[in-house]
Image (cartoon, rainbow, N blue to C red; front, side, top):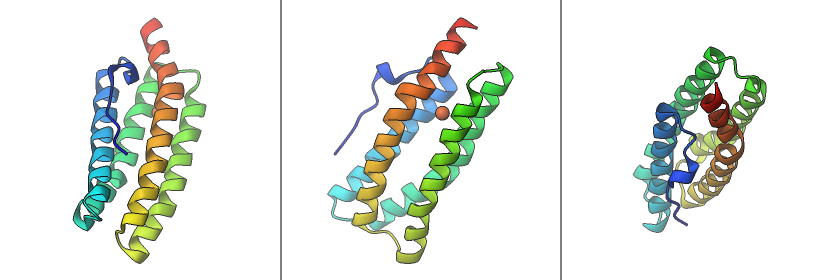
Length: 133
Ligand SMILES: [Fe+2]
């Protein structure tokens, strides 16, 4: 399954939108790795990227929310923490069993759902707040 970034996913903050776009690019890489019949190097690369992404992107977003005194910051932090928790399980499987197409598929569908939902709901609300304030 492939999924492309579209402008209606933009929240209106350039830094955040660029990071989201980059993440969707990695999602595309993961999907490519699956369709190429388990490209382990690419799967590994996406996992390494996600490990950095979760810390960098979430901390950038949370810093921005603190700076503008966003009232829903706790909801955001909770969802981000939930992401980190769930990702840990995929990471654990990755470290114990190594990259596999089964793991790539599970990670891909989880990531796609999580991102679409989080961006469309939680990050969009942040975007609206930033626009008004
Ligand atoms: Fe977020």
